[in-house]
Length: 293
Ligand code: AMP
Image (cartoon, rainbow, N blue to C red):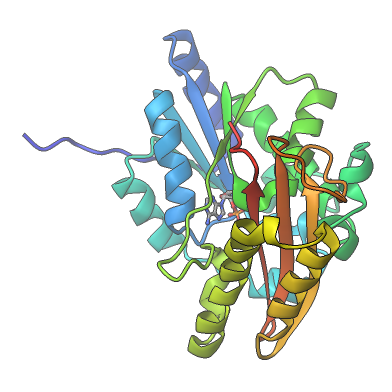
């Protein structure tokens, strides 16, 4: 007998909150996957992990204006809601929360909280996208207040974002646990991203060099005389990509995100990069020395 699949759609907290409250009273565990839509297999991997561990999986789709430091980027961000709903149905996700902007920012032009995110708000993504992480911390806070999940599922793809959200959760005293999911890649190695649809065929092919470079650096790290030489080799390879601008490639302690001078065996270390290819900004990273648990 085929199973009937439901996807509950809520556009407002007014209906979402009592629905989730009832589930919580019934003892159901709620997992939450916040997204900006234009869903791909990377997002679905988070839904699947959540489904393995929770009876109720809430996915939100909200293109958050406060995390875009570039108005053009916000305008061009892909929006594919019908396709997204089909993917969520296929993945057997329980709830789609699809708030309008007034629901998240009822005060209109939002008065954002200013979180003390320390070093995480100064380097890497933060250095190139001023205000980005305050926007992320604020929107995830507002979404979490509405969903109140037991577990929050986040992708390693946005590694710095995980540290930022971890910090916000600590500052706001949420009891929510964070689960980190591995990066899902195309066959070429390109990390899946909603922004990939904006790459033309040539740029899409060239973008495979990003992950190839990261894999190379991980594999050959012990053959270089220093971390500095390893980093320079990575930047050299990325700069060869046609029509590209390399913003950064850094080798960091995975917890503090401070650059390391030596790679210590067994100490979780990460190589992170951001690069523009053909006018599209892409990020990727690779963990070395240890898997994230
Ligand atoms: P976004 O819609 O880009 O805000 O992403 C929503 C969530 O999906 C974030 O936790 C991302 O880290 C995660 N995510 C995005 N791309 C991937 C991917 N290729 N593999 C795994 N998770 C991803």
